[in-house]
Structure formats: structure tokens, C-alpha cells
Image 1 (cartoon, rainbow, N blue to C red):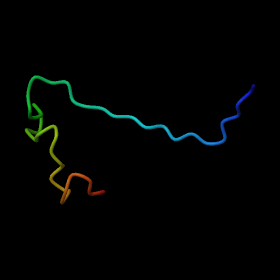
Image 2 (image 1 turned 90 degrees about the vertical axis):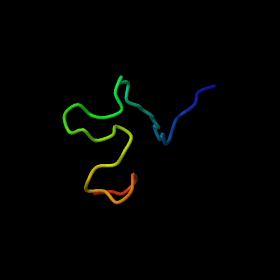
Image 3 (image 1 turned 180 degrees about the vertical axis):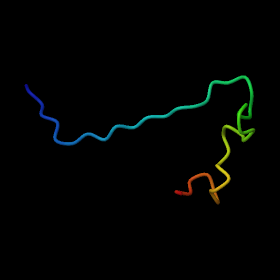
Image 4 (image 1 turned 120 degrees about the horizontal axis):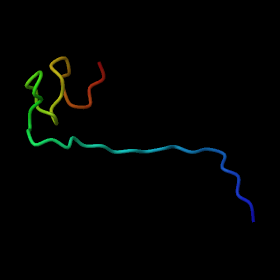
Length: 44
């Protein structure tokens, strides 16, 4: 039995692996949003 895939949507997740909660360069929280965003999912 052969199967032909017509459509595929890839999904991925990631997380920071760091000993600190803040970036050493900009001092922003790794899990926070950037200064230009109004909320974490806001597109700039």
C-alpha cells in the first residue's frame, strides 16, 4: 500500500536553555516580549 502526502504542515517548539532569566546583552527577559510589542504575540 503506497501513501501520497498531498499537504504537510510542520510544527515546532523551542525554549531558551540558559542559566539566567535575562539576556546578557540587552538585559531583557528571555520569555518576555520586545520593547516594541504591546503583547507577547503582537506582530511588529
